Image (cartoon, rainbow, N blue to C red; front, side, top):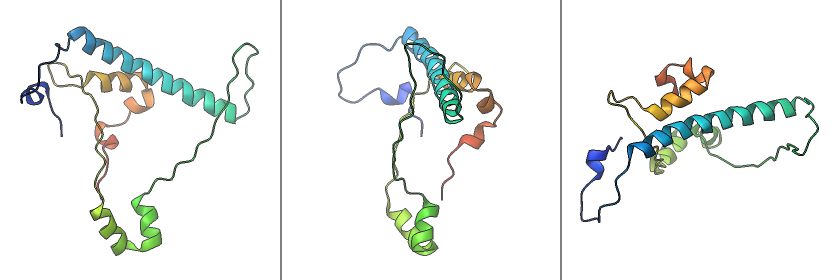
Amino acid sequence: MVINARQSAGGNRKPKPLITQAELREYVEQAKIVQRHNDLRKSITERLEQGVPVEPGELTPAIELDSVRRWSIKGVEAVLGFEEARELWNQLQPIVYRRLLIQDQDGEDLAWKGYRQANPALAAQPLDSQAEVAW
């Protein structure tokens, strides 16, 4: 579901200051910087794990491991069986994430376009391959 600027206005709320075109352009540019940051993090981490030496200097990289237990339907199904897993899955409420879209006049999301342009591997994938698959 996408809520655009026309749909979000209204109600009895006090109007907020105008969202400027400069802010929207800055958001799109920052999205490209975030993607570059992610690419560098991945590259440095992979090379550290491969034992690549680090140039001597004032900065020293390290990798910190953190563990999070996330449930997947396949994991739950392996423990409970298909029918019980599906019953449990249908009782769970979905987690809703907000992603800000900055669209041009053609409706293209410029921030997502910036991510795709900054990451050649992602740009090569069709857009629908990144969609989440429901049960």
